[in-house]
Length: 424
Ligand code: SAH
Image 1 (spheres, protein in one colour):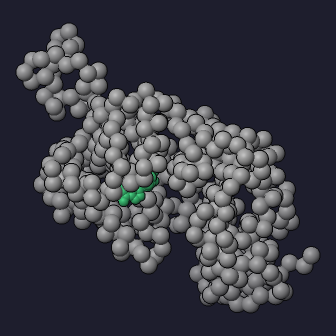
Image 2: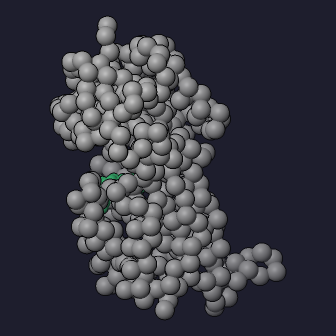
Image 3: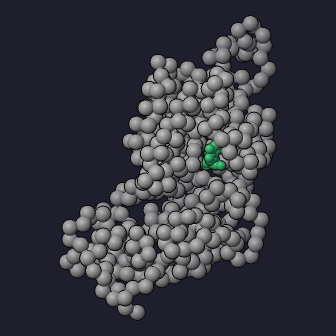
């Protein structure tokens, strides 16, 4: 088969050479051959030097997505090897982890696919035409490498339309129970890969959730609790305190989904965690997870819109030691960024008002259109409006199973920060 060739313009930004895996129509000088959507195409620079091979889709703004920088044949074996390499990288960096993202699209040199491993169940999301037409290669490789109990497809995302694809969800072969209990940082977390957000769970915050550990204890003194010479905690009136979690934080976990942050908070010693999500289904899942891990008596659940709930709590002068905000991506594209920033600012502004003096705001954004700098600026504005001073404990990114390509800022999407909040 003759492979078509795309020649790139001389005066384009050298993004491809910098590790970015998308070619835009405006960067192409000419195309030789008659490539069809989904075909492999060779990419050359203006002088004719070979740069890479990619998948071609004339319907998409991402007209070519780089698959390999070599001239190997793009076949089933190549897919198998790439998926296996991606899995080996996780086993190497996260040796004790059995559930994680196995393939993170472009950053694993498999543009437009996401593969998440939930113990012995795999979930696949296909976002590009070149991958769509080769989905059988992906499934064959997955069966060989993992011998899974089942594979579920969650291609229910609207960006597929930009590739000319319809949404699709369902079992790849035989149906199976889509409820899976995954292990994370010593916890058991029940996930529904068919009904949960995205592919069922957010593995990208695994290490960030573990980073909550030191924040969950050390709050008793703030509440006037003293420990006597026998190690017995007593309140300011000298009354003995029975609650074994007397030193633990009172936590508000907003946008809790499966309740993963709540579970970590409880594991690390929180006294009480309030979980909030707009979705009743998510709240049910969080409750089931609290029960599964023996934390039900330290948790409470609210199904409500965070924008309303936060404002109401401020009005009622409620406060917490730690407030966690892990909202969905408010900015879905570059055009909606300004509105999204207003949304982020509003929840962060109200959220920090709910933090007791010296308490902690844990805040995240998974929208890659919002850069880390704009995220920090947004927090700064919210803090100054709320008359607070924030002191950074730690700024973090996505976990090790979500690699970041230096030349591709889209792969660096998650911001996660923990701040102490002071009055001004
Ligand atoms: N913290 C979770 C992930 C959050 S995903 C984790 O670590 O797994 C975002 C969640 O926000 C979803 O569960 C969604 O139902 C919820 N959500 C979206 N809009 C909301 C709103 N306005 N108020 C409250 N929850 C909302």
